[in-house]
Image (cartoon, rainbow, N blue to C red; front, side, top):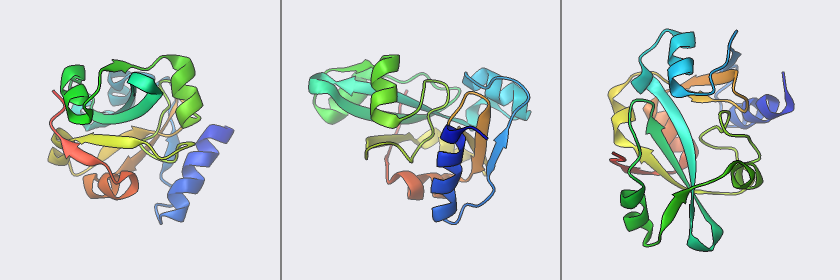
Length: 154
């Protein structure tokens, strides 16, 4: 297991979510790839997308894999201009690379918004540190581990 994945599993273990991380045989860099690998609906994939508000404030949005995030809506919620973060910013703020960013367990506490559409599923899947590792969780567990604010992201 790569160190990034071990970090995610250790974080989950501390929360009582033991042995949740699995490694997939192929890439799950995108929500489409993850859903295909897991044989689940794309809407069950909890994609973690980092945005940057002016003055380099990180904003994490955890969205259903089938939804496109409305950046203007996120900007209105935080009262600042918001743009999608680049790879260097994502790594610096989360400790993970794009395609492997988990919903929690980052280098710093991030302001987090959670897509209410994820609540429609009994089981959801999120990245676990790399583009080939994921973990299963429920919507209530997602809320608990992120302490995020529920919104409609689209």
